[in-house]
Image (cartoon, rainbow, N blue to C red; front, side, top):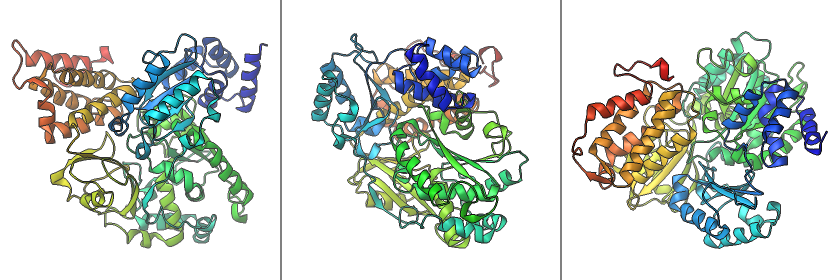
Length: 596
């Protein structure tokens, strides 16, 4: 056995040779070897008794896995629109120039490669980058870029780079319930135990708490369905895969409020009868793993995890952390579960829903980080107290991740029902032309809509709040979002895989000045085709921001058009038919099975 195989053997033992640990195993192997060769994947496949094609398929799905050498140093610049607004593209070009690098290629000496990643969750302190997938660098400047190039050329280990570069500030600007004073560890669990499982569930229903991940499903109903579902084992899963560009609230909660998150998970376990919990931590937040593991261990020592929690017989529950490997689609709960099971993160066909058949086919409740925090506060203060905050249909508070053109980016927590204009005033945003709420898949609001209010009955959001003043080209914003969705499509279904690429091509054409109003009409048509034909919500929402910006900021598109009239010889019907065929639909809107 060669040294490489010996290292893999050690990691296989650490992961119990379990096929559902495949993603975690590949992460550890790559951290050791820097990339995943076919020989390495063959060893893994044989050891786990899996087909090589399956293992290679998993390795090829996640953007942080590499089946070709990437170099001793891998620099990934955050490519979110807010990073671009702060000069990330120029800094990336400057670094490549200093290192004599071609885009997306490893240097001939095997030293370094430079590329982009969709968003690092550092929108309030960009431009940002990831080094070797685990070292965060914030607040990049031309001076830091030059220093970075020198460190790379000098082969200085990443852990010896200036610590200040990796400083990540919480930047809590306005705190309310979830960002304010927190319960003492164990206080919420004791309150839940004093009520009993059913009474705690009833109180949660009285609170009218809805999920904070964007969909807004009633938390009490979800827990009730999972509690009642038949299964040998029940699971609690925390969705910490905060991949929506412009969102970074979970990063702060995981950094400074981990006890509150884990407390909420433990209360969920008590209510539904789960013995195991899993946190799916996005790959970009891998730097938080050590501190989160330390918090879990401290809770075990305090009797807040493990056997007979708070001396309650049969109340046995523990939590483990899985780290993602770079896939936006894994923010969808069924795709997340697939990844937890060591597979490609392809969304499942539903029903059945996770509450009936989730992780390993067992009843599973999946809630996001902020929702579990809220559940902890409900347990301490009661459901009626929570319901008294916010509005009738949107109870409690919501944390907003504010970035872009404002004086004070960071986290702001407001009761639901707060006016958009109030939020802009608080963060120091002036001369604003647009706000993108909920990330690229959300809604783009123009200045005439700033009197609208945050809430499920009006403007609902997963947490992102990106501000654009009147100096910004809203076409460029929409172009960046289109590139994001094309990059993040999992490729499972033809309408999304092809449709998102066709949108980018049309936008590229407009940007080069070769487009016309006919291309805008094609973009509208592609939106309609994808909205009704894609396998999951990614493709269905991929054109949300595009549709809004065309409707509300049409001049931004017109300035990129060669002509406001159809080009000579243009056949609209032929163009639309081609788009339908390419996205897997015929003229009647039916799926073309031959292209699926």
